[in-house]
Image 1 (cartoon, protein in one colour):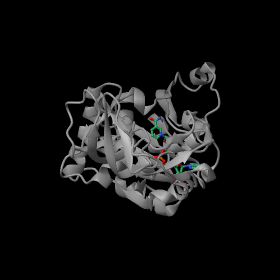
Image 2 (cartoon, rainbow, N blue to C red):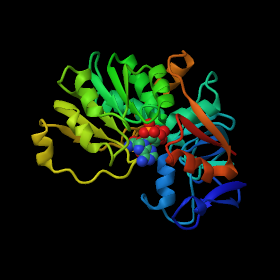
Image 3 (cartoon, rainbow, N blue to C red):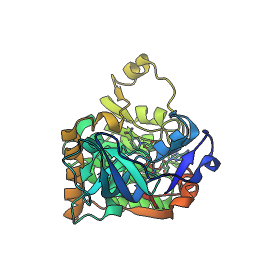
Image 4 (tube, rainbow, N blue to C red):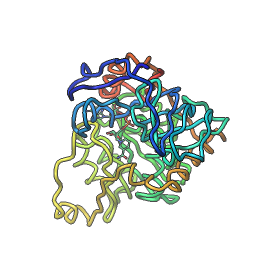
Length: 322
Ligand code: NDP
C-alpha cells in the first residue's frame, strides 16, 4: 500500500511516498481502509520534531473510512462499519490501524470526508467551549484565527451556546468567512489592535475567555484583552510556542486563569470521546454545524498540504485522499 513516512525529522521535503505492506491489526486493534485523512498541525510538529516520534514514522492521526479487518479480541466492530478516529496509527496511508476503543461510529447521513474533516478540529472546538471554559449565554469570547479549521467550528459552537464572539483573522476574505460562521465582530489583527477592539466589544471590561491557537504573536494581547479573573486558554502554536509566563503576570493583569489543554486529555474515556463525536455528527446531520473543506490533495501531495496549512493560506480543513 502507499503511505507517507518520514525517516528523519525536518522540513516538508522529508515526507516520502513509500510502498509498505498492508498492516496487520494487533490485539484490540482494527484495520481501517482510509477514505480520507485529515491534515493537522500536529502532523507538522511530528514531521519537524517539535513532538518527537520513533523513526521511521508514518504520519497521520485523523482518518475516516471503513473497518477492513479485526485484531484478536475485537468484538464490538464488524468489517464494513463506517468509523473515524483521531488517534490512528499511520493515517496518511491507504490502510491505517487504530485501537477499537478509540473509534467512533459515523452515521449514514454524514459522509466520510466530512467526518475526516471535523473530528479532530471539531472535538477540539467542542471541549474548548463545553469543558475548558464552559460558555454560558452572554459570555464574551475572543477567538484567534477565527477562519481557521478550529476557528470556524468554535465560532459556531460558541454561538449555539449563546456566547458573544469576537474573532481575529488576517484578511478580508477570512473576515467574511468568520462572519458567515456567526462571529459578532471580526478584527483584522494584522492591521488593528485586537486588544482595543475586545475592550470596546465589552464596554471596557474585557472578554471572559480568550481561545488562543496562534501562540507567540498573540499571547501578550490575549492577556490584555481579558476581564479580571478571565481565562486565557492557550491551545496552539501556529505562530510559534508561547514563552514562559510568570505567575505574577497573571496576578498583575487581573488574577487571570491560564490553561494549556490538549484534545487527548479531553477524549481519554470512551464516554467522553463518544459524547463529543456524537454531538458533532448530530449537529451536522441537522444542518446546524457547517464543515468547510478548503482543499483535497492526493496522498502523494502531503507535503503541499502541510506547506499550505503552515503558510496561513487556508480556511477550514485540508484532506488527503488516498
Ligand atoms: P488553522 O486552520 O487555524 O491554521 C492556522 C491559522 O493560524 C492560520 O490560518 C492563521 O490564520 C493563523 N496564524 C497566525 N499567525 C500564523 C503564523 N505565523 N503562521 C501560520 N499561521 C498563523 O489550523 P488548525 O485549526 O488546524 O489549528 C490551529 C492551532 O490549534 C494549531 O496551532 C494547532 O496545533 C492547534 N490545535 C490544538 C489542539 C489542542 O487540543 N491543543 C487540537 C487541534 C489544534 P490568520 O491568517 O487568520 O491569522
